[in-house]
Image 1 (spheres, helix red, strand yellow):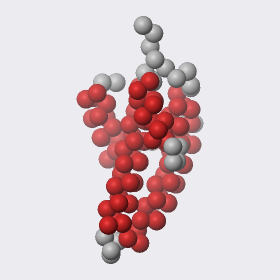
Image 2 (tube, one colour; image 1 turned 120 degrees about the vertical axis):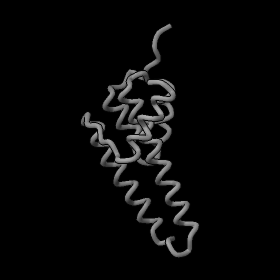
Image 3 (tube, one colour; image 1 turned 90 degrees about the vertical axis):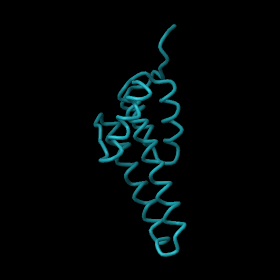
Length: 112
């Protein structure tokens, strides 16, 4: 049986994982289909980043005192995703401080 792959360059596939708004869909697809370990690593980190932004916005949005921070969280998340998209397309791997460690642990558990 042949290995599953998307036939995209690793740089493009990694960049699509971080793309704002739909990157989480690409990340899930690449986790299922792609065998390249760099693409899978970027897919997991991109999913974790999306989750952190969403959870942060929900938590701050639920508090009356900190609700004004929600737009800042969305804007910061969007800008970070744009930067990571460009860097991934250029072939650079940006390891976000805590998320990179979580990414490594997740990939060790599910297997690269």
